[in-house]
Image 1 (cartoon, one colour):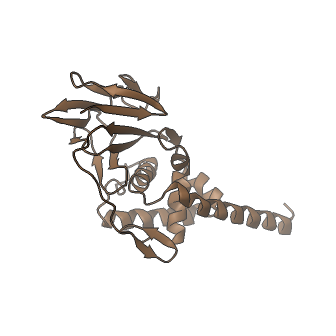
Image 2 (tube, helix red, strand yellow):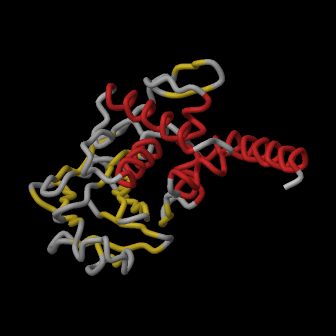
Image 3 (cartoon, one colour):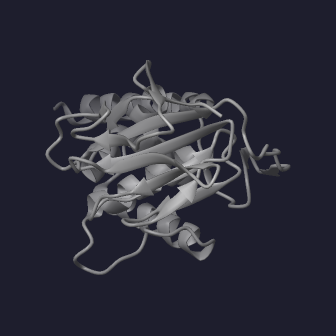
Amino acid sequence: MTLKVEFCGEWFDADRTKPFTIGREGDLVVDDNPYLHRQFLTIAYQDDLWWLTNTGSRLSATVSDSEGNMQAWLAPGARLPLVFARTSVLFTAGPTTYEVGVVGETPTFESSSPERTQVGETTIGPVALTESQKLLILSLAEAVLRGRGSSASIPTSAQAAAKLGWTITRFNRKLDNVCDKLSRHGVRGLRGGQQKLAVNRRARLVEHAVASRLVVAGDLDLLEENYRRASLERAEEEARTGS
């Protein structure tokens, strides 16, 4: 069984005889991002399986199959087998989210697509989203969805709120609601104490939503329509106030 790793359109071959390293340094140099570990992830062949190991000390990765049916949160020190035809690995360092693809020649498991549930105008998996909740996720995940397989910066809450035409108070309230809802469905990393940076929560939300296909590139039309509506409302308000 051979294994190939893809990032930003560049392909690498993993060798069974030695570990393949991913990070700021290694076989796959992702970026010179100072928030990224020098060696963050390792792919190695052992016991007739390829394994992905998080060798970092602070960052986690979201790992999923290509259909978004399986998802795992790979914490520092954890490892899991790479058993699907294509595996997506998303991780965030500082303000930037990266996606690395891992492709196997002869997968151990084949995933099947479960039926999705129609809820109003939003088609999703087991979690029902309101339109405003979906817009919030899309506003944060927009750059990642447009640049799948590469790297993208996640906007701040203030930037996302401004583009949506929302107040920051409304945005943060919606963000709290979405994170609470997903946490109740078992999604880890969306809750934390005062020491948990807000950017970490937004990044984890984006990683989960993209990896699980809670939002997909086709949903960006909904976001574009909201942007146009918000821009028109701002222009009308400025015309009324004369600013």
